[in-house]
Length: 284
Image (spheres, rainbow, N blue to C red):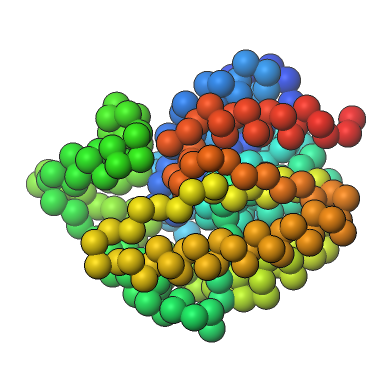
């Protein structure tokens, strides 16, 4: 049994379990969790190979889901609304699929991916994996804080999150997480889940689902304008699929947050408001 690192934010009310995105940690949830704890019992989990959780091999979604269930058992959490951002959103949906009796509902915050055959998917994978699991220089944290400033993320929040998502090494450099072997396996899993398209992927899940997209696109880096076009095209296609899904599946709700992809860091108040509103509307 592999138990994952958790942080208990306390609170009283419906149980929430929060999952973070690829290359991040549960610290990304600090600001939203503090708001949610006013009306919920809030626990956050570091995914395997991220933050302070141990790594696993191979890194597969079914194994991750099992480790989350074991961790929640150890924490005395028999049932929860599982809320995930990005990679964590995909995992939250798969947790609901595998554990319907333990999942009151699931929330996926901008956690959508594409198959390997999707146009330009290979270019995105190459860019993502080029920097996966590298040893970063001593000024890595400062660079992350500057990058976050582009999205209006306060420096103290950005620094805490960057430090929690990487491992300091004795020579002052930083091991970025997940390490490379796990990163390769994670990308394989993302492509596997994304290949059928959003609607087909969500088939067979009977738990209430809230599916949220970012309302704004990330500003493209210089020379990466093609990636902005890629993301915008994919977001439109997902939005079309989700609109049809919400009309045909009464257990599926769709929403949008006025933020870019790193919404838990950028607009934690809006994230908390959307999640709390969804939970209030759940049956029972």
